[in-house]
Image (cartoon, rainbow, N blue to C red; front, side, top):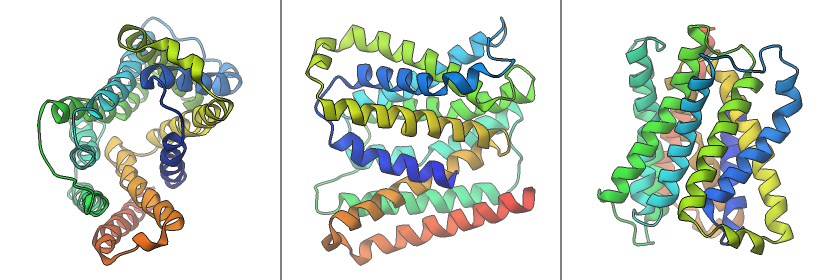
Length: 288
């Protein structure tokens, strides 16, 4: 999951240098590229083809992916970056509560405390990023839609854990990743066809294509495969808690590109994130 956080953090600069292209259609292509990269690994599993009770669960997991990315892209035009960053820190706690509701989360006081520390640190980094850029916290229709997207992405590892614990999903992380991303690509792609000018994809440059292949193979195929492998061992709340490291990685990249941005305002959030991750790693080691 530490590798997962680094890969996700590195994906944001790659997305930032791409041309203005239809985001939903671009995400569908990214997921399809990820499926192509996972094809051989998933195909080698004897449980590759889903049965009648597995396919609906894969479809629901794909709907979670489609819901999050669809909500994120729509909310980006109706909500502030600070508001979205603040709402995103609720994902681990939502995953913990949803997991507890279906019986796949271990109830204790340690993990909620770690989640609270990580959320405070991630929020501190988001506020530090917004200072001097006119960022302000608010809650409107854009924030409400994005919160539903956060709920969808929190549900994804819960469904995976529940499916494995009940025997509905196979042990292969590659198979689970392949089918959830594949069905997610179909759903996001249909949404893109309905609301976006898909013909703008024809303006994609060679650099855009290379970045899209990179994002598909590393920021989708590899990251979701790592997420699925971790879900088999950790609880949903613990898995999603590593998302608090993503803004920390982005902060380090920002300092590499622009050392003049280094300021004491980044320190409190950074320390809280590092402390939360240290406690999480210690907890996971003790549990294993």
